[in-house]
Image 1: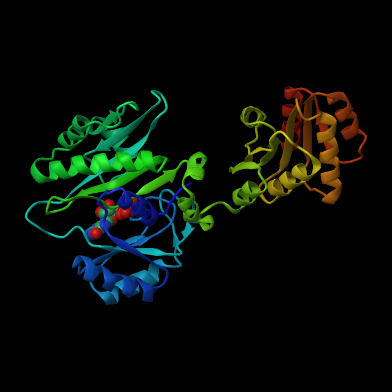
Image 2: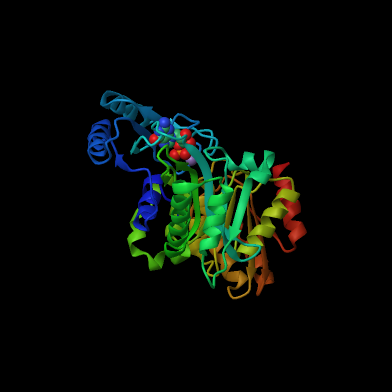
Length: 396
Ligand code: GDP
Ligand code: MN
């Protein structure tokens, strides 16, 4: 589950990680009230208005702006709320902004320079260990740093038996070129950040930038936090943090009926049981010259109701030019699935796009007979290659 910046920062703060303070606002009036409150609490005169959407690169898209007085807070909040924010990480249509975070300005001048770092905490799947990845090149796109100056990216792997050790946190601070008070602050920051990552059952923290202020405090200015869905049952208080407006509506609907659906850009819709077979089917579609329009795992119980629900989801995508159903009848019998396909088809009236059904496994022959004799415009295939050929033929 992805979180908004303001939600991620709240979680960090609850574990003692210093953050740039902010208050979320839904309207320009709320933004002004929030700015006044921040001024009272932090003494800040300037504020940063930040669009809250599930996408990075907001600054580049005009979703992060500095306001030097309350009038500017109101004007800028009014511009950002309701805008369609297009960033390097959104689709071409962009994302609608429903709320903004009003933040204290933390780039104030002081006795030393401010400095921006990059820091993330994530699982290294290769070693099976959590790691902290960090860089002196903060505020920039980390992919660019990785490409152009990979020697400026450091990693620190954590042994699960000991957790993050003090010397490791000090190494991070050292590699970031810090000394004195900023060094101590960074050690505290890294220790708290790692505790927050583990305790919140997150699968990703990305803090870009981590800021060294001009008075040598270390704080999170941005926060991208992803909570591991499989651990949400342990965090009942996080469940409300989900913002369905940020998610793909077809994927949300699929989730509600227990279907595992991922929207993709192609033209061949697919309906498969089992994630591995679904991946193989997507390869098959590509080989046949098509592009998968979705990933869809209907799971073990492909009855008529589920097949129909899946059909409806696939057909919501206007770019679908053909549908390939590829079901292996292990526990579920192929004739049941075939009947499900036929019932769903009849229930839905006419389906404009060609449908190719490959049913393999228990009672596959009976299933093929059912499809072939149904009188419906559905083509059956037994072999993988045959299915691919038929997809190719209908796309041609
Ligand atoms: P992103 O563009 O989505 O990654 O959003 P960030 O939260 O990282 O903000 C983008 C940029 O805004 C940061 O890299 C900073 O340079 C700038 N920024 C954030 N907070 C402040 C602030 O308090 N004052 C000033 N002057 N700039 C800020
Ligand atoms: Mn950022």
